[in-house]
Image 1: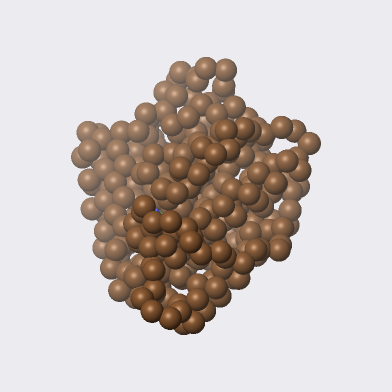
Image 2 (image 1 turned 90 degrees about the horizontal axis):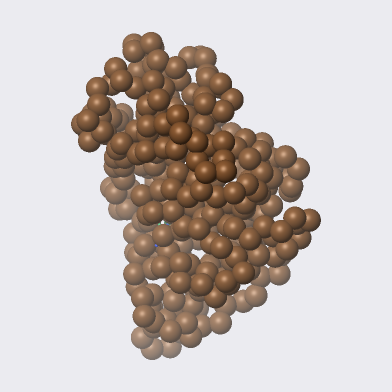
Length: 350
Ligand code: KG4
Ligand code: ZN
């Protein structure tokens, strides 16, 4: 079964093509899957505005989506008629961007008489580590991106419990906002990561007193410190300390949340753009009791393959499909079975 996944929730226009085989994975009911193509076009031009401009994002999706699909089909060496299912992210995300992706997907499905599956973007992130890894349920999934910062207990495909969320900014957002304050452009995460390389973490950031993730105190410290500084400001050391504080906070709160559970969970799959952070990847080695699983960089950022993967699994495992008249849900939340208040886990583009 060949599934095309269309992702246009924010500022990536991405199409992934996966082939699901009849073969089951070892000790699992999940099918084996092969990626035939993944083409992701990042809208770098938002950099000059210091953040994603929704109107420009949707226009760029409109201009690029056909080309991205054509390129993905060319790379996969298949004709569109060979595709069995169109999977598309319909929630949460920027309204205009969601409209472009879902309208395009509906048009394809209707003209080719194919099934369509509308999926939740956050759910796709949560299960994306399963594309490359055979993780045993239950495991924990940590999403650290520009729009989300949440930790879920993944009991099965479709069964998630929200364990941790942020009170204010998402992890990626705090990187982006701090970089914007220093006029470094957008997205800030890779820039801060680059500048921090090899520098010592000399600055002590204030302690965060809340149980959830929260970064407003860190942001205030970032704004105040250079203003009160005398002499040349040691940027690499400052960013290295900032990055350490943010990532250590995420790791610490994640481990504390897992310890509160009645069952023992020692696998944490990490996804979202911040999963690319080099300090994060080094730092987890200091916690050998937890197996932190990082996807390949192409699956960390928003991508069409995770959308194809979730759509394919919904069809294969639960025979789920969508009607062509489904709506977009820009603030669509992922239902949590128990856990903390899931209503507040909404999308907030930086
Ligand atoms: O998952 P993603 O591509 O898009 C969504 O937000 O859904 O994540 C983008 C975020 C941005 O906030 C960006 O600054 C951050 O991921 N990011 C990083 C790094 N690479 C991307 N943050 C820290 N270090 C990085 N190396
Ligand atoms: Zn995302």
